[in-house]
Amino acid sequence: MSARVHGVLREGTPGSQVSVKGWLRTARHSKGLSFLDVSDGSCMNGLQVVAPPDLANYDDEIRHLTTGCAIHASGELVESPGKGQRVELRASEIEVIGTTGDDYALQKKRHSFEFLRTIAHLRPRTNTIGAVWRVRNVAARAIHDFFQERGFVWLHTPVLTAADAEGAGEMFELAGSEEFFGRTARLTVSGQLEAEIGALSHSQVYSFGPTFRAENSNTSRHLSEFWMVEPEMAFCDLEGDVDLAEAFLKSVIEVILAECADDMAFFNERIEKGVVETLEHIVASPFERMTYSEAVEILERSGHAFEFPVKWGIDLQSEHERYLTEEHVKRPVVLTDYPAAIKAFYMYANDDEKTVRAMDVLVPRIGEIIGGSQREHRADVLEARMTAHGLDLEAYWWYLELRRHGTVPHAGFGLGFERLVQFATGMANIRDVIPFPRVPGSLEF
Image 1: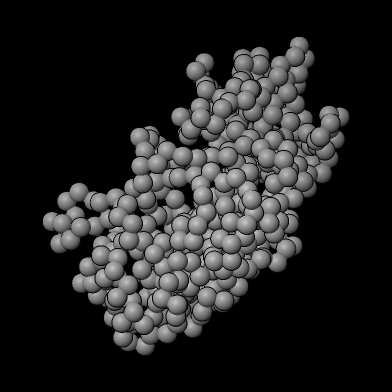
Image 2: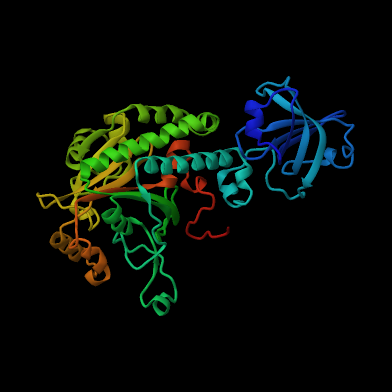
């Protein structure tokens, strides 16, 4: 069985016999040797394979290899005289598995991210997107580890739903669902409502899966399909929710820094200077906590010329959130107790009858990264809130019934997984941190 490139580069011993399979990032041919940079996607760096001219297929195959070709190389590891590489493979045999045509889109040059999105079937072979995939993989595992180690149950919430968890009306409807299901089916925008069912039977659950938003927006911050992480906890108030969110975010970032050092060094050098320092600062810093009202006062007194004016009752913009984290406290901020009018129907109403027990975690560079709340568990208050939002109570009969049978205070939050990966890598466009971006006018892959 062939070895993975990352294992050979880190642990390979000169003098040992190894074989690797992968794709060529580059192929340089001189008069007496060929130098093949082989990558199998397991790490940032490729393994240099040196092909001598005495190989049986050197003249008819190896000398014609180009970027993108797939090979299986076997031979002896030797110390490398080149800079930046400890070992290289001196090939005794090279099998050409797959060649490329003249129209192969990836060449040894920088391609724009806009262009790479048009070839999503090939773009993971690039350094940047390959590194994104590895960070995304480690982050996903770290998320599962965090919750599993704390006794949470992973709940697979449905993709098809009849309920709108956000009350926003921006949901994809399935044609013919009325005839099939007897009611209109939509693609879910959140697994939260079903997660509440889980929390009220298993105490601590989390969902981690795809969600959908039919918002016709073509910005660098929006996707039509994205993944959400949504824990839900019974016997929990807003303070416990905030504590979990802070511990969660720090834990996942800490794992990324520890296990993706080479990839993060690449992002720090090529994509966004200082991204590693920002992440390290988040892990080391206690999050500042303040109410929405306190934040509005700070913004109004700041003297800063915001594009969007600040006043109590508005939904804060990214520029406001970034000012709080980057200018005012210079660390992550948790805002709580938002105006009820700008928040969802399920959030616990405070005694002032103006605010709800909601919270947002704000981080430098992007603003909100986590949003959550204590849920309204009082049946009469919840019904009044739903009526005020114009929701059909009959459609949510089961949600209301949970409040009549063994109800308890409970809370949870949601994190957009792609936004986390975007923040961790410093990538400018959220479409470049998901393997196959779904956006208005684009469903190619």
